[in-house]
Length: 131
Image (cartoon, rainbow, N blue to C red; front, side):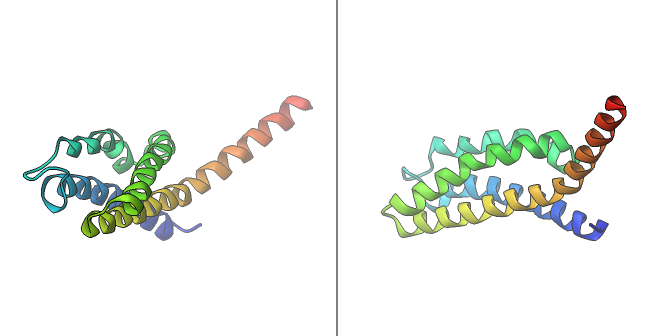
């Protein structure tokens, strides 16, 4: 895989994570809060801030576990998109689903060459040990 694609996957991963953080804050504070004037539910974005630095720095381990963390936000987006009575809130749920899908897909595509290299290295070690 060429470096341009890997760079694009990395940038898309960062952009979708940042957009998801901004969406969560805007959603619960201004766009469609549970209560008028904002909601404490905006704090739901705090767990997304934890992997942000590692994702920006291209930390493989952080990208791996954050791709699992993001699935919680996917589930929330599906639930809110299909159950909220407010049309704006439901639409924002679908936006959340889209952003989580982008993050997840780009993170996996970014990690693919590293996983292949790790498998190849493990295979070589097993061959040397078995000789």
